[in-house]
Image (tube, rainbow over all chains, first blue to last red; front, side, top):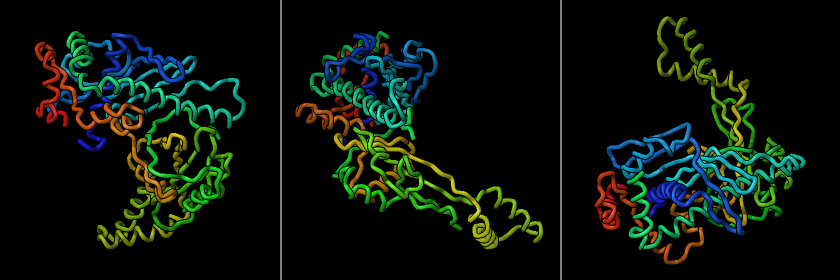
Length: 169
Length: 222
């Protein structure tokens, strides 16, 4: 495997790990600068097919991570392909869909504009900064996953705990 | 003009050096590939080029319209002029009625050429603006569109303008840019998808490592 497209599984494993991490340790993550971000799943999930004969499964509205369909997907070894996430850093809150296969952020909704900001120039600067910041946050959490995932011992330790969680979901 | 508050983004790594926004080279590069209007064109065609948030014509590139402190606000304008299909159908039906027979392929082509010449100078092109944010310190570009055709057009225009290629981010290339240790990066070449066990296959959990590195597991995932 040498091209990036064939590594889509890594982003999907990241999203699945995120679900595991949120349910077993909570959704707070430490990032650079001594800051902490909170991440939760919102109202959209897409599960990847577990094999060639299966199809993707899309769950919308409500709290899809708690549905029987989502749990059945985990129990059948499916990875999470896409999910709508809510991320909070202090007063700032973003919503977006993370496509694990490509690690792109879609349908991003930025935090509300700071009412104290003046004209369009200041607001534009803040919005651009918030687009950059959400990408940095996702990358830092992805890096935390990769530090676990890219260890030869991953399959005997972290993955086994996750497999037990998936099987007992 | 206000920067957008929502949207979908494709991230690129910039593979090369782009002149600083304050340099004449930067604005000259944009100006060389600026948007050129096709408002009066008599052919079906499209035009793509740079404009700025403050000047949608592409005539000027003021630094204050581009500079967002941590990034540079780039804007592409794409105009497309096309003969409206309904008008072509109306004129074809009229011609066929007066001829009392269906038009031949050649006659249909000639009719379309004639209509293009008469109608397109009076037809306004469709206009699309696509925003991007160039982050010089991170050597990245955020493109605010996930459409395949827009991405391809943008990548081509960016290369023609700055002679620099854009590499789209994917899970692997992103991993290589996150400051992970050398051992972790070396392991990237070996990592294979985890073959998560299905319900009722309790034994599979204890043999996860074996299952996930087997050629069979690799085959399923690829």
